[in-house]
Length: 155
Ligand code: HEM
Image (cartoon, rainbow, N blue to C red; front, side):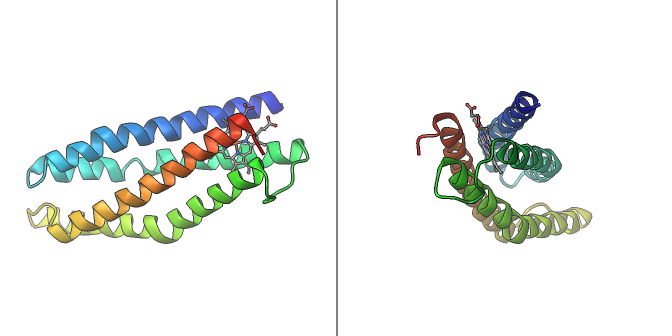
C-alpha cells in the first residue's frame, strides 16, 4: 500500500514539475512572443485551461503525502525534512487559493469580455499576467526544494 501511494505521489510530482516547466518555457514564452497578435489571447486561454490538470496533481500529492505521513508515524508540521515539505505545500496552496487563483480568474473573465468585442490583451492584463508568472516561479522553486527534501531527507 505504501509503495503504491509513493508511486502515485511521485507520478503527481512529475506531472506538476514537468507540466510547469513546459508551461513556463513554451506557453509563457509563446504568449510573450505573440504579443499583440491573435495567438496571444488563444495561448493565454490555453494556459488558463491547464488549472484543473495542476490542481489534480497537487491534490494527489497532498492526499498521498498525508496518508504516507500517518502510515510512517511522521509528525505533521515539525522542524524536519517532512515538516518543511508540508509547510512549503501549505504556503503554495494558500497562495494559490487566496491570491493567484482569484487573479487568474479575473484575467480569464477580462479576456472573455475583450474577445467578445474583438479585442485581445491590454497592457494592464499583460502586467497582471507577468506578476502571476513571478509568483508561479517562486512556487515552483518551492516544489523543487520539496523534491530535494523528499529525496535527501537530510534533516
Ligand atoms: C511539491 C510537493 C512535494 C514534492 C515535490 C514531494 C516529493 C517527494 C519525493 C521525491 C519523495 C520520495 C522520497 C523517497 O526517495 O522515498 C517523497 C516522499 C514522501 N512525501 Fe512528498 N513531496 C511533496 C509533498 C508532500 C507533502 C505535502 C507531504 C505530506 C503531507 C509529503 C509526504 C511524503 C512522505 C510521507 C513520503 C515518504 C517518505 C518515506 O519514504 O518515508 N510530500 N515526496
